[in-house]
Length: 370
Image (cartoon, one colour):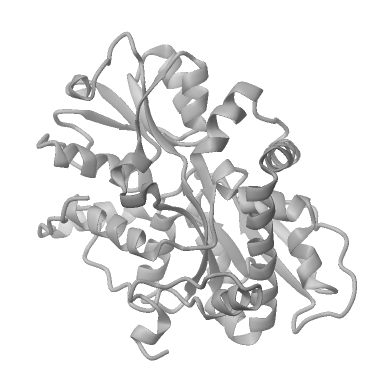
C-alpha cells in the first residue's frame, strides 16, 4: 500500500466531510432493529445480569450471526442473559453504544475510528477482531474489461467516507487519476449508493460497477457482473480488517468478566466456523432469514462466503493504514488513535485457550498509560 498524502483541509470542506463521516456504515441509515432476547441463560450470573450485543445482519458479521444462533456466546455467559440488537448503519450502533443501550458491538473500521475520534477517546475500545476481507470490485463486463477501462465510468461505493469508499478513492489516486472526494466527480465518477440499492442501480445501468462488501458483490455477480479486483490482493498477506468488536469503556470497567466471557464465546465461534464451514454458512444464512425475513440465494451465499475470513486478530496495523488513506483523500483530519485498542481481555482468553495472542500495533491502551 502506498504511503498516504496529508493535504490540508479547508474549514468548509472539513465541516462537510465531518458531517458526511457521521453517516458512514455498511448499510443504510435505518434505525436499530431490536431482536428477541435469545433464551438459554443458565448457571451462575457474572457481574452483570445481562449484556446487550449489537451487530449487522451481514455476512461480514458472521461471528455474531453464528455465535448467537448456535448459543456459543450465551454458553460462556452462564446465567448472564445475552440480549441482541441489530443495526443497518455504523453511526446508529455507535450512538447506541454511547447511550448505553448496547454494551458490546460488531462494527466496521471507519465507524469505530470516527466514534473514537469524536468522543476524544472516551467512549469505546476495540477489544477484538472479527472478520477480514469480503470486498470486491464487480463491473459490467460489456463496458469494462480491464482496470484501465474504469476511467470515465460510474462506480458505486456504499457511502461517502465509509471503509469501501476510502479504499476505492485510495486505489484511484494510486493510479494517478483525480477524483474530488466530496463530490465523487473526476476521472472516475464515484457514486455513493447504499448496498440495498446498488443491485438495482447496476441492473438499470445507472452504475457500471461497484466497490462493495459481501454479499452485495456476489449479488452483482449473480446478475452477470465480473469480479475485476478483490481487495485482498491489495494488502500484504491478503488480510485487512473489515469488522471489529468494540465495547463501551464504562461497561468494560464495570464488567470485565462479562467482556471476557463474550470474547471467549467469539473465539470459540470463530474456531467452530473455520472447522465447520458448510454448517457455519448455513447457520449464518438462517440467522439472516430470522433477522431480515430473507435468506441469501445459494449462488450469492456460495459466492460470498469464501472471501470472508473470521479472525480474532484485529489486524490493527491495517486499521491505521485505512485511517491514513482517509486522511490522504481529504476525508479525515489526522486522528490520534493511541489507546483505541484494549486487547488485554482478548489476550487473557487466547492465553487460557492456548492460542497465540495478538497485538495492537502500538495503538493499545498502554500507549496512553490508561
